[in-house]
Amino acid sequence: MKATAGISTAAVLFLIGISAFTISGDGYKVGQKAADFSLKNVDGKMVSLADYKNAKGFIVIFTCNHCPVAKAYEQRIIGLNEKFASKGYPVIAINPTNPDLYPDDSFGDMQARAKEQGYKFPYLMDEGQKIYPKFGATKTPHVFLLNKDLEVKYIGAIDDNQDADAAKVKYVENAIAALDKGQSPAPAETKAVGCGIK
Image 1: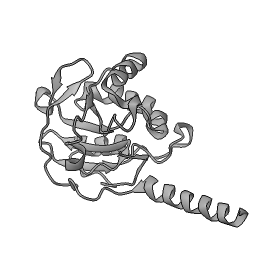
Image 2 (image 1 turned 90 degrees about the horizontal axis):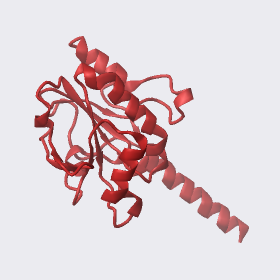
Image 3 (image 1 turned 180 degrees about the vertical axis):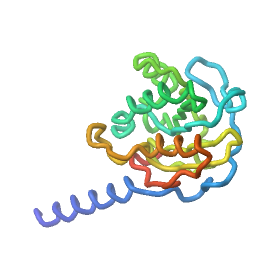
């Protein structure tokens, strides 16, 4: 009985490990151009990238309410917008989760979360889960950094550690710095770490 339980626990941990570390499969690749979208924001208005006439690029982040990893990165997502929106790189957060499976990700709960945390960026609902497969997002959070022409320049994690205090390499910040210098981000892709999109 104990041996069986040990095997089951090991199998579960192995599966969790596999689901936590993946590089996007189908969807946009670095260098490809993303299609614009129109999604409902928590304020009830529809938002598209074309609305940002003066943007130099976009920090598109697939995230959600329920995922512990997304919650761990929430303040860093807020920080990215505070640091880079005024420099032409706004955060565009998209919730790809099916609220029928995770009620905490309902539109009403998204509105409450955005208000509670003081989001100053769009928090959009991927109603019908039509947008995240186009991007190839697999985790929450999962970042796609686009330039002003909507070309994908970086895909992956925000930084190298879920624990903010232990994070040493700030992938998104470094990628934006490279773009501002007219360079290609290096690395251009990292492993997204988080909850699998349901």
